[in-house]
Amino acid sequence: VPETIEVTGGDYEHTLGLAGIRDGIEIRYATAPLRDVFLRMLTEHCYEACEFSLSNYLMLKDRGADWLHAIPVFPYRAFRHSTLYVRKDSPLQEPADLHGKRVGVPDFSMTAAVWTRGILADQYGVQWQDLRWVVSGKQRFATLSGVTLEAANGDLEALLVEGKVDALLTPQTADDRKPASERKLRSLIADVQAAEEAYLRTFDVYPINHVVVIRSDTLQRLPRLPRVLFEAYEQAKARAY
Image (cartoon, rainbow, N blue to C red):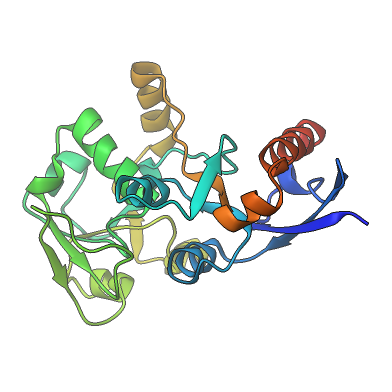
């Protein structure tokens, strides 16, 4: 009878072939909203193995966490030039215009925000200290020394629409799902793809956003799991290609 492991992650074409029995381990794959997966793994340690925020993983390890370990599988990589939104009638035309502005961000520690802050600094000369950060809701990690976050009541996207923040850093908005004629927001970077291509040419970096982690007690039960799981992801990706 094979050992069973349930892996939780995103709904991708390159994970469709992940489930199956390999080396006496039956891998079951379940999809779930990833922000929920990250928060539940962080607070409840509830998944044996799952897709996880890369920045949060690094922050946990920096703080001495030994209850989870990553394998070199990165299910989600993406450029982050499309995360900056402003109102359609905003006077802000490019990232350099953000100096001194109030920028909403759901979670300061999320990987998309880390990459975007790096892109702002490296590509546009805007340092994170130049911005006034506004958050809504509980943050996954305590605020780092030197970082000042203003807590706001209400939905950050609504605050942007109302003009109470100048810009919003988020991977996606509800506004994106509306017909183009009804949208109230636009990307701060007018030609996102051109900016991404320029970033790649200059820095030769395709940003890693998520990593696969395994809980320590699961590793003790199944010490061969890292190899088995790595090979399963590798084969599933090859089939998708």
